[in-house]
Amino acid sequence: MPILPFLAAIALFVLSTVAGLPQIRKLIAVREARHELRRGSASWIRGIAGWAAIAFWLMAVWFFATIIGDWGVSGDLGAAIERSWLRLRILLEIAAALGDSD
Image (cartoon, rainbow, N blue to C red):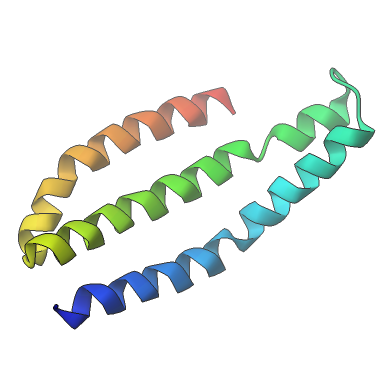
């Protein structure tokens, strides 16, 4: 079993955790605000505005995890990156749609 994909997976876990802390804090704030605010209020609308950032973070982690997983299975990093271009295009279209809605 090659050790580099395993180390890359650990690095992705650490980096995604560090990068995702603000999004998780936002998620907690939105959940807490849901119990205190009514729909239609300006505070409630501001409270849900951060969902796109959470979605972007999850998409980035998923994208890099698929590259690492492909690399771990195939053993060829170059081919794994080459196959990831279609996934990236799909993710960019989803991200553009989320950016327009937020």
